Image 1 (cartoon, rainbow, N blue to C red):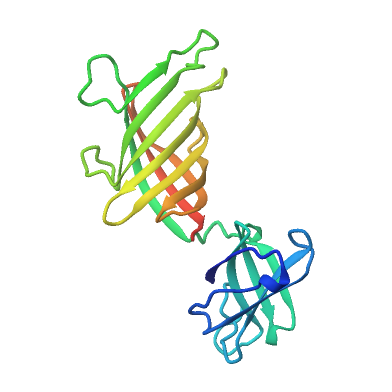
Image 2: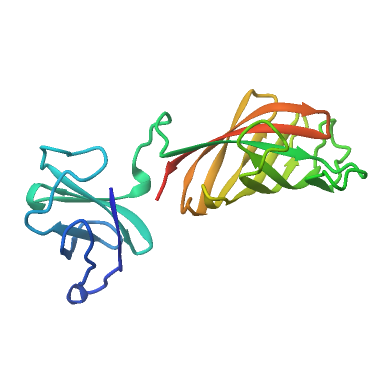
Length: 251
């Protein structure tokens, strides 16, 4: 799917558009279509441009549709033209259906957390910011702030490829459950940028899915799922979690 940044137009006589690798020129127009104050963006290709250039449709030997991702009015839209530009449909990109087995990017990392116990200043990567309350027996109310290394394998001393910075707190009275909100900061030759992750870590379940709600840099506007799996733990001092990060929106 191609992408173009098209400024939002308010008047028909203001219409102008960029040129790009889709074709040597683009014809942009406005028509009534019930989208964004009844205005729909119509994108047409010059004569001879190849059709069938969009995800999930067309392809070699077909000329039924042409597809384009357009940034219009601050929102990514998918514009699909019928043959010869005779018809046009526009929908927000996020309305597409995704297959769980087909992420656009997948990264598996290991999260290492060493809780500060008062003596391990040199090694600790997290610390209590608020103590647990006396409400229940499962650390209810305890808040932990962390700056944890993320590695590609199980080893704590492997070179970190990212750092997880954020917090979690225990929020259930009847069992161990923590709510996480953190940012993965990447700064390596492989990846640069951030991923923002948040959600409930139901510790008594083998796997837990948290939401990837955004990103920057190489992960600009990324969205998906981070699946937690407890790899090991040593009491309250150290635990390691496998994070299987699957992205379904990649730009």
